[in-house]
Amino acid sequence: MGWFPGYAVDVETGERLNIFFGENSSFSGNNARFLQTPGIASDMIFNPSAQLVAGVPGALPLQLVFGGQHNIYVTRQKYDACAELRSVLTPGVSSIRKIDPLSLITWVCMAVGDVANPMLSVADGLIPNELKIKLRVNNAFNRTRVIDRIANIKTCTTVPALPVYEFEFSGKAAEELKQEEYAGALANVKVVPNPYYAYSAYETSQFTNTIKVTNLPERAIVTIYSIDGKFIRKFNRDERSSRNAGNNPAVGSRQIIPSLEWDMKNAVGIPVASGVYLVHISAPELGEERTIKWFGVNRKFDPTGL
Image 1 (cartoon, one colour):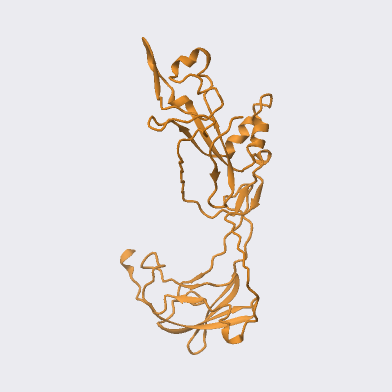
Image 2: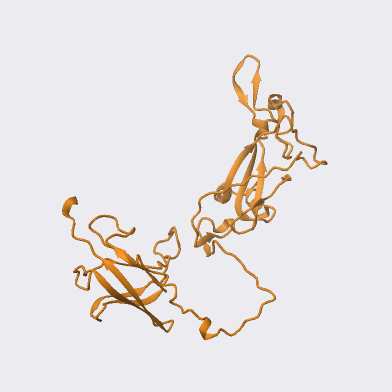
């Protein structure tokens, strides 16, 4: 094993990751003639040169050198000085097992030196100056993460977890909540848009009428009445999280949707008239209820798109 003068950190978890390098040792022996600095590709030291190609007199094509082909590999495996990776890549281990570490690699590059900033000696730390590479990619919140152990990669063994954050509170003590300070578990529930003037951003065509009741708890009963108390529509909401089916689902658990849609029709599918309606929200598990007044102006049927 050789020493790589750098480190990698996962910005989502703050964990230090395994990082390692390789060099093209085929540039040794008789092939060392391709290198302007012989030995840099087989000395197990991270010391890429600035040489890109080498020409052999009277022969084509040119030999691609790329500084000795020092590849840098970053894995998603928690840092252990690459001890477990080495146990799999050690000579004598089945070549089939050597395929497993490839699934741990998340980023790779081939480093080439800079003429203006040549590599230093091992005694001087190799690196002439500090270089930081920042990688930011679109990454949806993961509900599961593959265990780091190489032996479990093929079986896709997972543990819950990304993103995970830890918070610490110090110098604070719990205080009894006063009744006048409590806004209620349903305080953030809204009916949007309110008022509704024949259109909402949730609608996809002239044939749809859509409003939403937002910020609902997992389980709730939403009942809509006219202003004189006549029953209009009832929704029995149950959005408790459940496991997705399949051996390898993209997301382990179904995400809870915090809202429900009302198409402005009554229980038998007839569009309601314009006016004021009462939206009653009951959360039995929280022991609370709330009633919201909603005003809407319906629009006439538009057959132009038929």
